[in-house]
Length: 170
Image 1 (cartoon, rainbow, N blue to C red):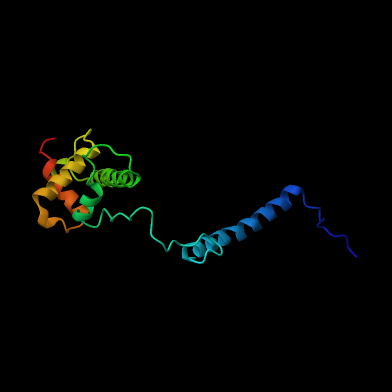
Image 2 (cartoon, rainbow, N blue to C red):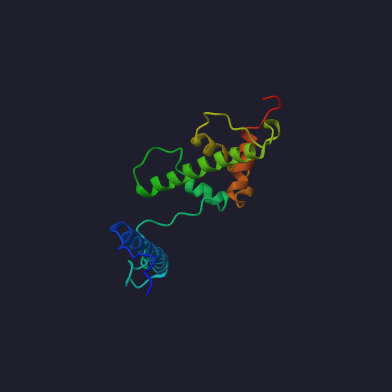
């Protein structure tokens, strides 16, 4: 019998461990997805904590982006005196976060599209605070209550365009 050209060397610890790690990774990823899916659907508490069916300790706040009415409800306390109520702090944070994100996205969108400054819908100057933008949107809604049913993104766009128009030559 001819001698084998291929010699079967014993595998080192590193080679066998890499194979083991790859097998664990292959099994771990689907297992995590399955666990996530089960937890997102579970209401029994068998695998995950049960879904809450009783009354919540804090009332659920409206979706700020749905309408001007919802915007006003969430942002109602922005100019009032300070308070440490947890629900109020959450509403204020939601309001300020939504408005800051909207204003930045609104500006960046036109910049990325290459719209010349003079043709942009609104030109919010640098340094304008988020609270000032909230005031602008609230004023627009106070002056146009019939539009409060419209989506907040529409209202905010029109409010910003009215308060911060772009001027030719800037």
